[in-house]
Image (cartoon, rainbow, N blue to C red; front, side, top):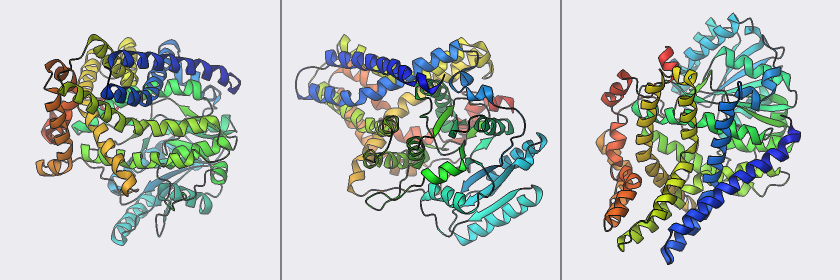
Length: 547
């Protein structure tokens, strides 16, 4: 389980990825017809396949570890087994980045965390800092009043507001480390919607104290119990998928792990020294800062690890489809900046691979859209799918959804995991509902990313804007204003596929969500639909069932 095993592990994992990629490419080559459209599909698939193969390989390795180990988190993170229980020796800051947030939602979970740490006898080893980038004077005054009242009831609470938000969240954190970190050795980064339990926080601090050369430990993050239909369904599958994905990835990445920007612990001094982010050559700030900070620390010789344990680490997911699509656009804009960072000197090979993975995650969207368009052109000429086409589509689908399928298999095989969700029957019901919903939504989401990335070179930009975190219904007019282009694309593609009924039957799972994008957006935010799902405990999480 040491870094000395990294070359062998990575060679074995690389061989698995290569084998899956070769199989997918061969199946695609057998399926495409001769001609321009077929060549276009094959070329686009060649760029999509590496991500699909990586996804499938991560999931297979993760599933094997989840089923074969008595302690999967400890198996991939040995420091967890060496961690000393109890109060940490070092001082740790709980740093919460806020900007125009509803403090009535932000502060109660933090109060419960501080109270729990105090009850565990560790309250004097933690400091809570609320790091504000709120610019509006009225909002800032309200924010400051709420925090002052909160601090009167809890010790070791501090508040700092910047005059501007230079560098966005990364600049906020670095400003704190430069000016206010004081005696703290560790910083646990939290977002305004983060929730962590005292046990999870103490576990992170103990792991850092057990391994002095660790710079970051990133814990798995799952969705907070959701009342709205959209996040409820989305995060059910995301949780299952991340469990398998992160476990498999931690096995081969070892000390070159990810950082997702929150619900993680970092060592203050090396982070301050090596993770400072300068502006890009064009003067813009790095948007997706977390992965860059991770690879910078790795390049400096520090270790970054993932703790694939979901217990006690939560966040709120976007409450409705519009917020989700906007978040994806922010991430996409940030990940596309990594093209410029790949050329930076002194990065490790694993660091460059991590940046490339982040690029491929979003680059696949326009390529999938191109493949779907080329298939529609073929169908419009009357071409019907063959058995080879069906096999290739099924193989690509399995690889694309491999993380959540592996997570679902793990829970259904292990009765004790399914029991946390109300039993196998309840879990399977939630999994089927999520798969049906995401089969409609994923092609729509990919189309939105493709449309956004197509406009990015022409000046379209996004930044770190305040986020809506509250459940809300979506008016039909608002949904139509946002999604009419997606609907139009779906209608045109479906009409093209209609020239070949067999091709239409195969294409509908990928175009139906576009055609019905507007009602899908409205209904997945409708309070009545959400209440119906809640009452029947569809896609309920262990935290919801335990409350």
